[in-house]
Amino acid sequence: MAVVRHNRHRVWPWVVSILALLVLVLAVVGGCGWKLYNEAKQVKAHEEQAMQLLGQVSDLSNLNNIDAVSQQVTKAQVETSAANDITHGSLWNLASKLPVYGDDITTVQGMTSVVDSLVSDSVPQFMDTLNTLKNSQLTSGDGQLNLQPILEAQKNITAANTSLQKQVQRYRDLPTAHIDMVKSAYEQGNTKLTEMADAIDQMSKTFQILPDFLGSGEPRHYALMAMTTSEERSSGGLIGSVGLVTTDNGKISIGDFRSNTEYVPYGSGDPTSDESRIFTTWGPLHMSFDVRDLAAYPDTSRTAEGMRAIWQRTPWGAETQLDGVLLVDPVFLQELTNISGNITLTDGRVLDGSNTAEFLLNTVYIDYDSTVTDYYFQQVAEQTVGSMFSNIDLTRLTKVAQLMGSMAQGRHFSMYSFDETVQKTINDAGFTAQTPSSEEHPQVGVYITEQSPSKMGWYIHRTSKITRSNCNGDGSQTYHVEYTMTNVLTDDQVWSLPNYIRGVNQDQYGKGVEKTLIYAPAGGSLTNLQTSGGSVTDSRQESLNGKTVYASIANIAPGESVTYSFDVTTSTKAVSDLTIDQTPMGWADSGITTDTTACSIGK
Image 1 (cartoon, rainbow, N blue to C red):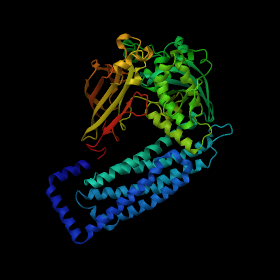
Image 2: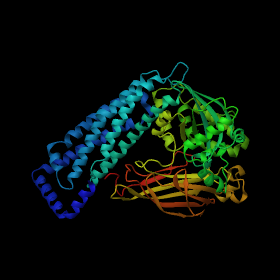
Image 3: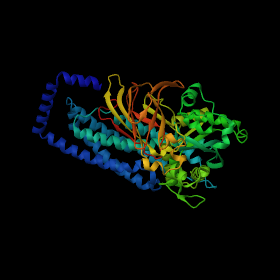
């Protein structure tokens, strides 16, 4: 529709201008123009106040004070109703018929209508469900999570979330405005609504998986795989140790952790021929695919299958059937300490929500012998994961739910179930990391595997910029992507670090040697791939388990940067902006910036 309208305006723009001017002059002469202007100012004030009040709903960190949040929603209802009444008066309805700029009136009318529906219907549904949860007994007698209230709330949370997401999509489908003031108001509203929609969507999805994950109906056994992202593997990092997590009707128990050296004698994770060619045959580091290398698979499903194959060969695993795997990294554990509280290690060191990741990914290799580093990781994992749902209230439950969702998005946490029905729920909720697979929500995949035995990943910082360059006539979108890896070490720092960090091979001391796999979006294409800086091998086009991937190796010396730049065209089915799925770093910030001002999805 937008394309047809745009072409029509291009054919007779002078007619449009004259008609618009004529109508506006008549309106001003009749006094209507000033009335419309004054009413627009009123609408702006009402909507700004409503959005400010709705910000309380996006922040789910203090929902034990849910009565106060509900009062904010009630106040917002007054504001949105007033704005909606104004914009649907006879004067606004008449103005919406204006050529060209009538779209701006229609957009404002749509904005007030959507926000009013949200505040009057969707948000109250969500708040009512949370209020029910608040008044429920969330902690069972043994201090663990009581699953029954969550099971009862699942349907209502899903319904409220579905309603809210539909309203937000209505907002996004409104006509493109021409007036800068309307454009600005639209974008501000879109940002606020997206924040709220994302927060509620994450929470809703987590509530769908929690009962099965926590052993509702029967106990579940998961291999908890601790990833060290300082030695990158595509899905995260080298697996340092594996513990057994048992969940039973809301209670989490963690059995003994075993270091990767105990698993090595029991073989590899059965790589495919593609995986063997790309990760084992092609060096310089040849993956053995024993337990240490299982996160080299970009898809968690393959990591899980490999873990189960090795697990079944071990004496301790032969008697316990795995129901799935959990992949966690130090960033996830650090964020858990923010919720569950500080951790005191056996030597008295205190870890909290600001220093846990750095300790596990860097400091531990400097301050301690390499033989005990896994032991400290185990201590942190046991205390944080083991107490995720202990002595919980609504505020803490929502924090955990939000954390699991956001950490899954960044690949700091991933899970997989061997039960197909359970796995479908987990996958639909976005908790299983995988290479780009959605045409509707396009992603570029960039996955890194360190090729120098080292812990240099802590010093390789990655940033990227996505710039939309074109909205194509067939509905697809074209973007330019720049992906940069920078080695932040200095030459002087290299010599102060132990070999365990800087590398065991002298010619690679302090270098990042990064095997880089780049995937185009599902149903889309990747072209004009170029590199600059450092030393990068030519990109080779490979097939990895049925998907095309562009593979190369970047050597990045201290102080150097390497940038991959390329163009991406999405599927014609895309309904959201392009994002990047990547190997996680040692912090929560993805380093991704986006400029999508060239045009808008669906506009």
